[in-house]
Image (cartoon, rainbow, N blue to C red):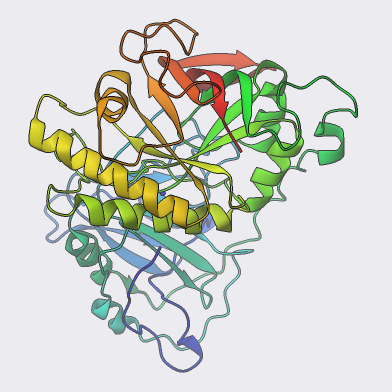
Length: 433
């Protein structure tokens, strides 16, 4: 779910890019630790917070937080909407829900690169000086080459809560380098995945829209899963960033995007930013800053799309979850936000689009006058009807032709090519990358 301001934490050879802590996927070292260190439990009668030791780092775990070892539970979904500490790398196909929106304080600590560290003198006491500044992602990502580890910390509304947890982390005097991670499974050969020359397509090269079946899920699936599902689907969604993006994206890279498109998929890149003032998620814009936040979201979304190799001219969807559109001030704030999202994203060179509920965000924007409107929409109406038209909330003349996607069924499990995912179902006659 990265722009952070951190105090200099290390000196000499250790004075590197923003740094947090030392962690990794050292199952052997963890196995040698007491059960309390593995689970985050505190022995009976012990004072102070629970402490997890991981590759030499001592991390205080606040009451109520869970500790998950991804080496022992590789299918565990790294979710940012729950208080938790995740240790190690996720497996190739995390078992995530179809949709998670919203963030709270959580930590994910994993090896960086091959997980090997070059231990030098580290002034661990300076970890207490970390500053986490507010940013568009509600996230800070840090790397400590000396230990060969990286950390992702996320927060809900107040970065100070995350900062307090991080400031309590300390390096211990004992440290054992993690073994090399197991070799990754070979990625599918894009030459075999690409459609054969002359094969029929509903999305001709260069055509900005497509018709067909699509699915979305919280975290980008593995390439092997995408290949297995390709005969059943033409379109998939990716969540490229935003303060309310609820799942980690261990698979999502520019290479993943390139290879999935080579398989014949088309993609709907989606940014999950701040939500409506009367929405149910904790990350919200306000009536006063709606326009400014809409512009900031567009700038950040364009930057993230570019980092994934998604070129200018592609559509980017903003995910505006359902809200109470009967509240006039709230609805007005949403319209100001969308107006600036559309204008700014067009200035950034991308096609501005919108995902929302058919009976709140999409209907409100469709009826509005005096605002800049998205070029394409993706609307949610879980009535089971796989048709983008004849919807009770959207007149057929809105966003027609080839500018509509409908999410017609919410989270459920489906199996294709022998692989099961938790997905939302979509029918597409709209703009895609």
